[in-house]
Image (cartoon, rainbow, N blue to C red; front, side, top):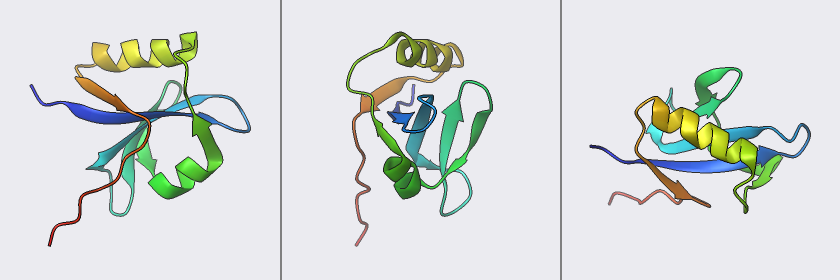
Length: 88
């Protein structure tokens, strides 16, 4: 099964959690993302990182979103950050 890199972040203003999938293109230049209420969508990775803070602890809301995503069939590899490899 394919593994999916995910970066969980907490919005600075609302405190909600967003799951960013930086290796999955939504519509260039956006990456795929997931939030509990609105579900799948696109996100500008750089802007999302600027407007959020890291989820350093596994709070209940982060664990809940993780369970929801694995229930949808994702095999997640959780990262704190993501740097795309450059193809030369």
